[in-house]
Length: 166
Image (cartoon, rainbow, N blue to C red):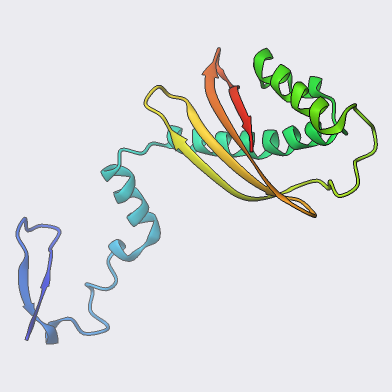
């Protein structure tokens, strides 16, 4: 009985007897078993860079904070002007209209049944244009809601250019 192993030096698979792969063999102690080595290999295969990782982390943080803030505005206990630094004016106007429809007015105290939402899931999709399309699902006391965001690079920072509440 033989097993097929791929040697780092050989370009074709080499058949070796099973007996030659003893548990204390040096084949199991190679760096190929280390998670860091696998991560570097996968990064090379999928052309991922450190810049991609930092960009992804920034998008996750922005999506997480903006999604919660949007529903706090809609619930009526956060001012929409607090999102002006990260959103386009059209998005701010859309959220303000939605908040006026749902609450009727802004109030300092939260409406009954509207707690600060907990992020249940985030879904991120990187577009060819460089923008990110993100969906966050938030769980509240009595309901589950979702927000879809389009985040684009703008003058060296990220800006939400479209928002949809579900």
